[in-house]
Amino acid sequence: MDRPKLRPLNTVPVKHDGQELICLYDATGVSDKQVLVNAQTLFILSRFDGAHTLDEIKLAYTRRYGELLLGDRIARIVGQLDEALLLEGERLERHLAEQLDAYRRSGVRQPVHTEGGYPREADELRSYVRSFFAMEGGPGLPEPPKQPTPIAALVAPHIDFERGARGYAHAYRALAESAPAETYVILGIAHRPTSTPYVATRNAFATPLGTVEVDGGVLELIESEYPGDLYADELAHAAEHSVEFQVVMLQALFEDRPFRIVPLLAASFEPFVADGGTPAGLPEVEGMVRALRGALAGDRGRVCLIAAVDLAHVGNQFGDPGALPAAAREAVETEDRATLAAAARGDAEAFLASVEKDNGYRKICGVPALYTTLCAVGGAGGRLLHYEQSFTPEIQSMVSFAAMVFP
Image (tube, rainbow, N blue to C red; front, side):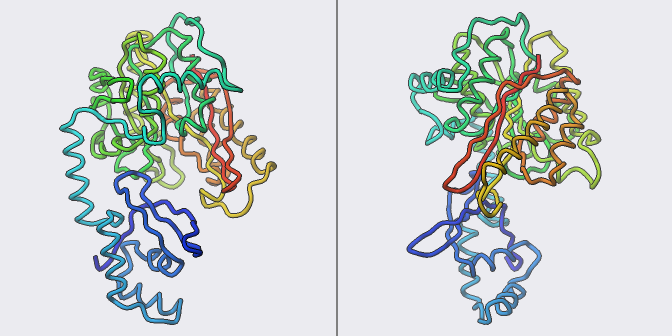
């Protein structure tokens, strides 16, 4: 620990006992600890990057604040963060290895978002999901299937149900009104760093509505085409919500229709793409796209893709200082709709160019899942069903999301 390295953490400003503090927490769920720090401690932690030695950190602190940073103080900080699993190192690696072993031996990925995410009782959960369709701005309850074949792909939100209810309803009504597929390949988002662009799991998914098995045949097809290790970061599935929320929606709508899933997480392409490059040239992306095209073309209508996608993340919560007035939100909507129009054309590269146009201001976290889906459906035109922004005035922050269908 001579060169401590802080794990990627979320930060939220808070007031505690009259002080302005920063709350650090692990959004991946590996650690459930929260740490409150003041500005001086935050300065120290900003040097916990694996490159600075403790002596270098102490010297930087003295230059910044004009006082000594004693060795026992920084040692306590390192020890507390290490014990809380917020630092890279042996303790974290042992913990992750134990967790991964337990996860794989269980064979079932347990629901982890019933606490505050959705009701834990089955009947209450069914009623809760049905209420999405009937709420103001919702599409109404699904009618009997009108489309004789399953759709190729669906784009649905992965934001929490409370904020995204209408978006989920518009997406899943379209799915319910087409012929049912046998297997839904769900492309969620890995909200934690991974060593490969895609992550699979063989575990079945359990929710209060039952357990959904994985389609081993489709998963084997993906394994055969994918050049990397699909399971190197399998533990990322354990706490990730983006797939879990789609499984809940499928179960609530298709209680009487047996189906299986293939749970996948798509990670940010940025760590894997060279400057000026495109994900299209990555062997992992090429292999995944080949596999998904093969699955779609296999038995007509057997497989449907679901991309769990949120769009812009803008405002104080996401590192953008100042107010977020209506004019700024309208500007984000204009850019979002341009991005969605490129996606609706089935043009994966134009979609990506639209996302990158604002140099990352919108912080769209659904890019890898939607890009992969667009490549897999092979240029098939899509239809935008719903667009919405969830704005939280108290923290001047907004998340946008959409529902789309690709026939």
